[in-house]
Length: 361
Ligand code: PMP
Image (cartoon, rainbow, N blue to C red; front, top):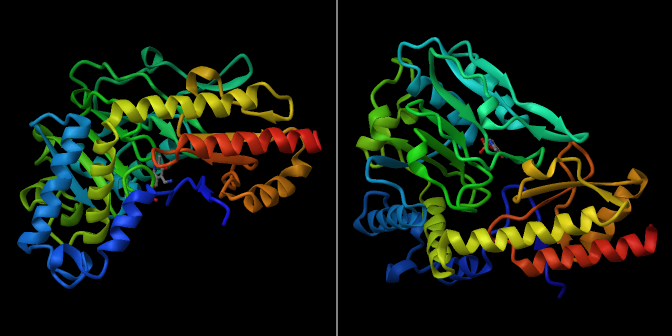
């Protein structure tokens, strides 16, 4: 059978070793004679799973003790509402950096709760799409926080700079980049991420929040989105997505066994270099993002002749390279190459691209 490589942007590929382990213990987890899905989230067995997952995540990301880790539901989009409702306090505004589709979606949701100060960071460098560097963000003085999205999953745009805004509260949507590179958590007030790319299956959303930001929630905030309520109840105020939590825990162990984030960082760089290298060396393929803002996780590319898109997708699929179709708002192709995608997968893709160009260029 052809080896399949899945370039889906999310729900995305999971490490095969993790899937095999889950398969092996699916019907008889931990010798209990049932699956982990069928036991109480309050049982001592599940609490151990939950605690271990948190500990492993804290080790991987070096999360300081004055941060809570919350295992929530509702996806990153629920956080688009939860962030303003938890953090605004008496403030009427928050700074929002508009760098792409997801940052913009967060702004639209925030408009229900405040009047965001929108900073349009979209710009051009040498005719390519780029984002303003952080020093050029015109932040306001009365904002409760500054929100940005370091990796735009659809646009393939990334902000790799680490924020350095003194005592301003920085909030980041890391849905498509968490765990892919080292991160200095202490520079952030809140980090959130939907699980279905670099963490585990859909259904789980991670929130990492600094202690002093708990307790400012608006009265109308649903309790299931209230960071303080979730923290006080160890993320079990309501029934958590236990299977997604368990599987994410296995992914964290997989990451640790492979040398953690610094090793992932190196492999992710090698994968991105390989793919962008093939795109840049050819007139047949094109990526329209400036080098300084290129995403290492989501690589959109266009064929010079869009009439060949359909054939490219058919042939790549037949070669075991799945889910390369670009997002409907952008078109063309997109290869999402999160942690679980091995270097061999990207090598197989680039070999295919070179061969396709030779045959159709
Ligand atoms: N933010 C980013 C950066 C994303 O990539 C996505 C999903 N692709 C979302 C937010 C929305 O996430 P969810 O569907 O989990 O609400």
